[in-house]
Image 1 (tube, one colour):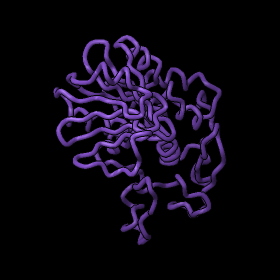
Image 2: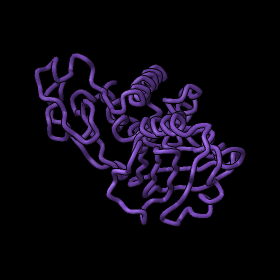
Image 3: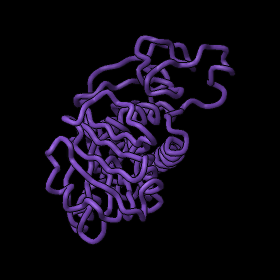
Length: 272
């Protein structure tokens, strides 16, 4: 599932390419056909992201709400389509001149009102990428919870947009045991976690990849080969199970937690 920085990049791309322009809208697959027909020929006002939710605004009470889920993909294509997938999987197609936005396999693609969009945002947690989020809403829930901090950070009602990579990496960067209960996290520690998420996730929007390794642990500084992974970026623990920690050399561990694989260093992250 894409993390929040990906959704914010998509919102920015949609706004840059189509914002303020009359667009053609269709649903070759047919599952969004009636809604697409009602939007076809309209002006796309812009798009915004909140956590993992993407909202494409076509004017008062006409908002396309997209959640990619586990398998959804949204491509922004300048020129001829490059995907081999046919129209039978194309849920939503937005075009203007040679530019296209192609949506396939989303968890949600629905036409909603402004009020419904506001309700989705209200039910979501703090989004570190948005300047209107402060981390206070998240802290109010974390500070009272007996759940592990690893579980809480993945709860989109608490920290919106934080996924498995950012969760694992920010806990490592602050040497926090992922099984530590939220209510035992100090306010000072939470402030540091939140500030780090803001920096890391906003950098992800700018760079289009997740990098969490400090300068002294980069490949060129340590004389090690760069990480090769489809997600890109340099990380400390994510998908490094069984490999030595970049700092202490201890093997990175992994185990399932609420349906996702958790990664951590048992030596560096002993803070309980």
